Image (tube, rainbow, N blue to C red; front, side, top):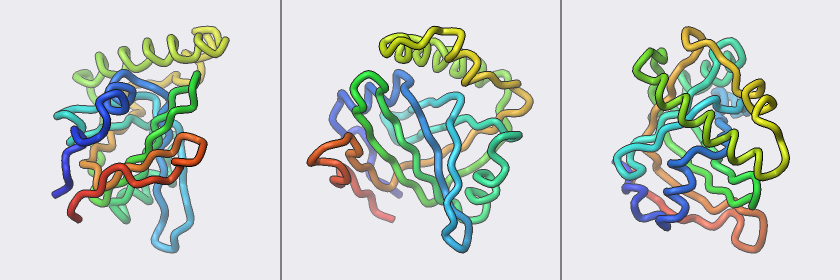
Length: 165
C-alpha cells in the first residue's frame, strides 16, 4: 500500500487533477521503454487513485508492458510553465473504458484546450491530438508509490513522496 498523494503540495495535486499534458510510460521485461500520450486522466481519492486513458490502437506495446510488469510512470506537465510531476506505480490495472468514463474524458479535453491555448495552440489542434473512439480506449488505474518533481531546474528529480512498496 502506498502513501496517499495528499502529502504532495496542494497546488501540484490540483494541477494533476484539473487535466494537463499527461504522458504514460512503462517498460518490457528486458527494460526497453514504451511511451504514449494519454487522451484523458482522472485523479481520485485525494491522489490515492489515478486513471489514465490510452488509445489501444496507438498504445499496444505500452499496454503489453504494463500488463506484463504492472509498472507505470506518468508525467503531468503544465505546458505554459513546464511545471512537472512524475508518479510511479508497481501494480497498475487495465480495463476497457466505457460510457461512465465519457464525462472524465470531456473534462480533460476541455482543460487541455485551455492549457494549450495559453501557449498559442488552437482548440482544433488539441481536439485532433486527443481524438479517440471510446471503444478503442483503455483505462490504466494505479495507486502511486512514488512522486518526483520533474520541473526543469535545480529541483528536477527530487523525490516528493515515497510510499511503502
